Length: 323
Image 1 (cartoon, rainbow, N blue to C red):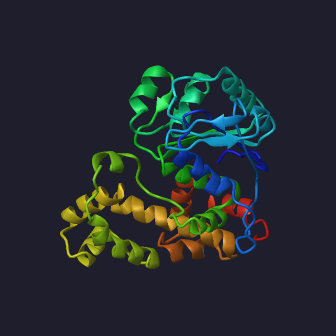
Image 2: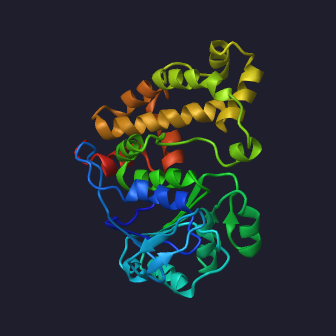
Image 3: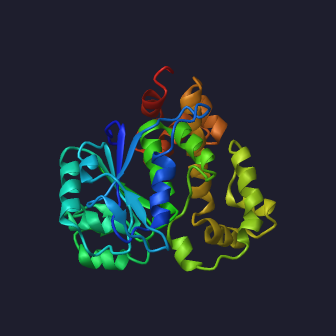
């Protein structure tokens, strides 16, 4: 896990043809005032635009933004809000984001905002994503970029890109988790009434544009799994509980969740291990058994593969008072 800079000030750049849901997803995570009951960080949150004043929208209302781009010049996190006129780039915006990158700030472009990073030359050789409708176009425009059409977000160095619409919340919560740990991310997710982490990727939404009612089939099972992570949760066990053959269960589980049963369970075990590493002083061996990995070596393998650091390093970062 690469060490990220401390975030105190967050600047969001909006432009004409602003997409309101994308902007709202950024406000929900980064722009909330203090909530004493949450004990989550509060940021100096500012929205800015190349030409202060009226910013044209495309959803029957406009925005009024008082601040110019100078608000982004000293921001620790610079966010590019999506807009529908995404192939026309304001030179002043490109200059600001290049300067932010050069001074080590975090850049987060959501949905069509990722095209701004490409125009600024910041996606060359970098894994990135955007809304699934635009991924082919992005790859054609920026052939040196490593565009991934099948993920909710990509985090490569100090550059974060998010897929469309609600994935803006997923990407923001991922960044919060990297900066402040799983507990803070989960607290924010609970406040805005979303899961702290979604498995799968954009592919599940592309393939099933009109979803069926499979969630009614697996919803109770997923809740049961989270409460029984310490048990044997192989496909045979879960398929018996679902009254399906193993083959049918595995196929339908992947169709609904976007992940195999094994990868979904493993991700939940890693999330639970994060929580225990932050909130308890229990040994890694005990935590491994509690979350179903069996032993510390297996926990270290999956945790390091998923988070980029060992359980001990994670604990030192997010629970410095715990030995």
